[in-house]
Length: 291
Length: 211
Image (cartoon, rainbow over all chains, first blue to last red; front, side, top):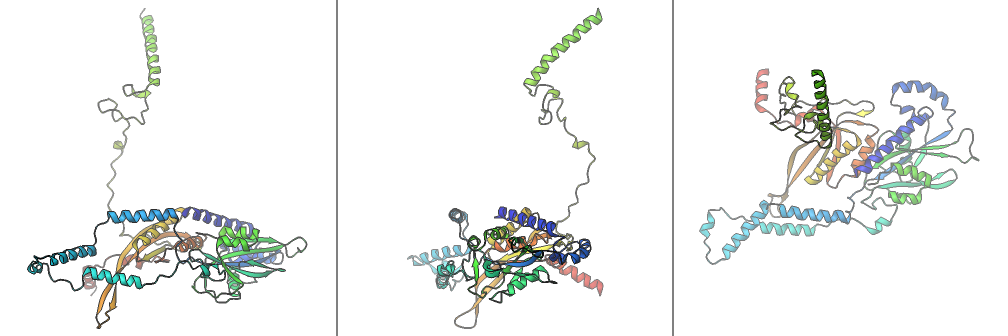
């Protein structure tokens, strides 16, 4: 698991750095994000003049994910290995205090039942306990039987794409159907950037403006994790609008029972491809970590 | 006459040496002199005059023996946070199941090595035992039902880039096992001091001196 993670980290870092170098000067949205104060000072004069001339509309989108609730099922090889290790550990282990007590008491019981039992011999060992170890074990077994485990996989909830409780072993991503231009598309919730706010605030606004309100989310970091550039077809292109740039921000869902709505879907990474456009999905796949 | 003879003898010696050279190069072995063997990797036997020919460390001046400092007494300086990196962070992993807690903390440590995050320390806090007491069905006395032990492991990172932090946190959250709590906070001197045992006699003496 660590190996793919490193590749992912490198990729997203490279993406981030290349993004910075490409758009540091042109992109007005990054006024607040520059890490170097010297850089910021030199950019101030430039960005004031460039606000009018940047032809790209900026949009911030949020990639909200629900983390896996239970661990994933084991691979058959992993299952076999686990059983073998448990067996080996059992065979190598020493007897515990409780087991010693059980053995002693069973011996004592068998001696009691024998005909030549002398209770005076037992007196030196101390008083007999009120609760025998075997009785305690029986009581524990009863408690275990009474305890109901929640099911790991519920087939009908898994098929309901709008529920956030489906597929507890995987991480799910929120997809919303939004109006973009003239058509309705399935994409990560987004809204357009307004003057005077940071891109992260735009992403938070995108989350809050969804039809089902009240998603409690924690944003990871102030910097976007991915970008998607969309150039409008030549017929629609004008001097002021060449296309849109979508910046993605990652967020993690904090509450366990979020509000549901028919226009919102919770999908696993492999199901995303069915709903997203191919170019968009290629860029989104780069920063979605699936473990 | 003599010089002539000498010349002859020298040339004869040269001839004698040359076949020896060729023989040497073909089959180097211990009996041959040093200049034709691999002297770096072969050590000479103790009775050979060249025994110990490669030794040089005994010629260096004697270093003073390292003063043994106990590793934990001095605190490592706490790195301050800058604009682009967090300071000293403590990633604390705690839970009831020791195998899960230990394996998860080892996973975090290996992940940091992979991602290039410097790990300054990795230690365990003493386990805390919690006794679960249940009320008896008959009467008001409580009896001990179970003893739960909470294990804690801390991985201390010396500096974490703010660009790497979201990726790191996401991986940590996605691989968190069930029953294990994860918390990340800044390292303070109080946390460091809390690991040591209290010394009542020393504190008593200090109080006496102050009064």
